[in-house]
Structure formats: C-alpha cells, structure tokens
Image 1 (cartoon, rainbow, N blue to C red):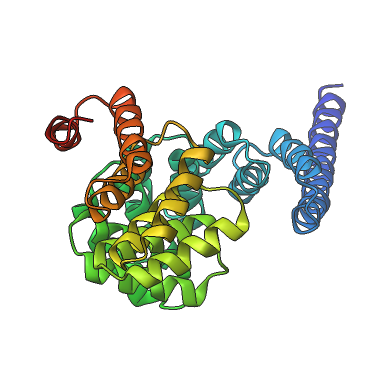
Image 2: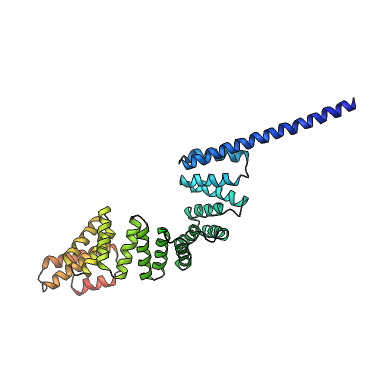
Amino acid sequence: MRTTLIILATISMQSCFIFGDKDQQARQAMIEVRTEQAESALADGEYTEATRLFDEILSADPDNVPAWIGMGDAYSELGEWDHAEPAFNEACERSPESYDAQFGHGLALQMLDRLVDAVSAYHRALTIDPMSSEASLGVATSYLQLDEPQHALPFALRAVEIDENDGRAWVSLGAAYEQTGKESEALDAYLAASERLESSPELKHNLLHAYARAGRHREVVGTARSMLADGPSAEAAERMGWAWFRLGDYDKSADAYRLAVNTDPQMYRAWNGLGVNALNRWLISERSDDIALAEASESFRASLQLHQDQAKVAKLVSRYGL
C-alpha cells in the first residue's frame, strides 16, 4: 500500500510539472502574440489600442521592460504624459541601462514641467549613449525652460555637432546664444534652423527679434510681413513700424503701428510708436500740424495709462505740453 501511495504521489507531481510547463508555454505564446499586435497598433497610430494590449502583456508579465516602454510610447503619442511618465519610470527601475527608458522618462518629465528631474533623466540617457543628439537637445531645452541658458549652451552645441541637420537643435542653440547675449551667433543659428525646418510662427518670431537686435531693418520688415501674411500679429506689426521708422519711411511706420494697436489695443510700445511718428510730423511741420500734435498727445497718454513706469515718455509729454 505504501508503495502504491508513493507511485501515485510521484505521478501527481510529474503531472503538475507537465501542466505547469504547458501553462508557461501558453502564457509566453500569448505575450508574443500581444507584443506583435501592440507594436503593430503603435506603428498604425492606434495608440489607445496599443495601451490596452501592453496592459494585457504587463498583467501577465509585470517585469516586461519592452512592454513598459511601449506603454510609455503609446501614452506619449496620446499626449497623456501623466500616464507615460510612470510607465517609463517602471521601465527605468527594471532596466536602468535602457536608453529608451531613460530618454522616454526624461521627455515625459519635461512635458510635465518637472524640469530638474528631466535633466537628470536625460543625463542618464547620455551616460548610456553619449552620441545621442536627442538627449543632448533634451538637456538643452530643459535648461532653457529653467532660465539657465549658460548651462543649456554646451548641450545645444553638442546636439548640433552630433546632428547638424536637426533644425530643432539649431533653434535651441539660437535661444541659448540669444539669452547669453551672443546676438550675432543667435541670428546665425536661427538662420541655420530656417534652412532645415519648415517655416513656423515660433521660428519667424525668433528671427524677427534676432534681426531687430542685429539692426537688420529690412529683414525685420520682410519677416514681419511674412508673419502678417499668416494672420494678425500685433508683435509683427509693431516691429515692422519700428523698422520702417529707422529706415526713414515714416508713413509706413505709422501705418504699421496703427495696425498693431488695432490688433492689440493693450500694446503700449505700439502706442509709443504712433506717438513718436505723430510728434515727428508735428516737428517737421515747424509745429503747425495741430492734428499731428493731438495724435501724439493721445498716443502717449494711451501708452502711459497702460504702463505708467515710462520715464522717457513722461518726459516727452511734459516737454512738449502733451
């Protein structure tokens, strides 16, 4: 009887191992199928479906690092950074040496405005792949958002050195140069970016102000005109007025400033531009153009109502009895 029990127990244990192996094989087969489906969904832009499939994989295998990264990528594409960040964090905890996990985590943290943490994550990615232009760019843009352009500059330079065809890197380099007072270098970088990127409002904005700081007035007019062709822009109109004034075309300057205040009545600098043009007309008329004098008074007073702390404007009003 004892022998029979031992034999039965042995058979039972062997059966458990056999069924266990079969369960493991079925589980692995399911993971492989779902992984293929999830990757296909990602490639096809079906990001919500991809998150569902990756969740199914992770329910069966919580330590599946590619699935955590895939989950993070899918949520990133959906713009759901609050869900992408913990997914990448799980991947980083399980595989600290994974570049994709560290970079994805850095990007998610940056998009959540957790900039100090983002810099650290990007640095970890760079430790894994020092030749990553994207990680260098991530560090640079994070430092720019932290208002630390002096720290952003070397990483922006590095990103450009690694991939000189990346227009985004040139934009970041231009911003770093601009914010560290290197205006000529900033303009060169923005121009390099414009050669590599499709035109965008952000790039035009950067070029507009870089041209203005460099005193390239005709380029300011051209860039402002391009911005206005895209739609109303008080900023572009105001800069155009400023440039036309310095080019000596006061009528065009006044027209541009009028466009600026019509677009944004709160833009006190444009009111100042109108005032200066009107005052200039009054002085040229040997102080006989009362309409110009009235416009100058109205414009300067409108500016001071919007922004009182303007000593130079207040001095003009007092000097000429406006």
